[in-house]
Length: 180
Image (cartoon, rainbow, N blue to C red; front, top):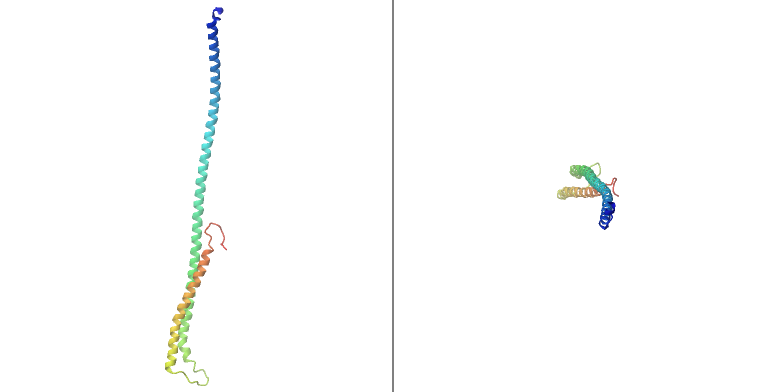
């Protein structure tokens, strides 16, 4: 019986069966290798997804931190500018009050001082006529408001210059310390 199978058809059948067995074995080995590669690629994919999620989270955290730093810096700058504004306003008002008080003292003293020029124990000197003395006093009274106005404007300009210089020292770039 075995001899009957060893004819050309039997040998061809065995050869075909052997080839099919080899092909099936190769296919099985290829399938195991592809499955292993697929698992590795899946692992790499998940690692990339996790790295991407971490990057996005870090970028969002950095953006949030930058927004918080910007807000803190803006609040710091605003507080410094308000303080400068308040100091400047207080100094300006004090200087104006001093100038106005001095002008008021001069206004009060001006008429009395003109009347006292002729007295004081010295030898009498011929005085000015009433018309000339009145013109002098009128001119003096007219000059005082003009001088006060000029003084107020000078103080205002001086305070504005100081204010601009102080505002220029405020660091708006988030760095600490004053700008030089």
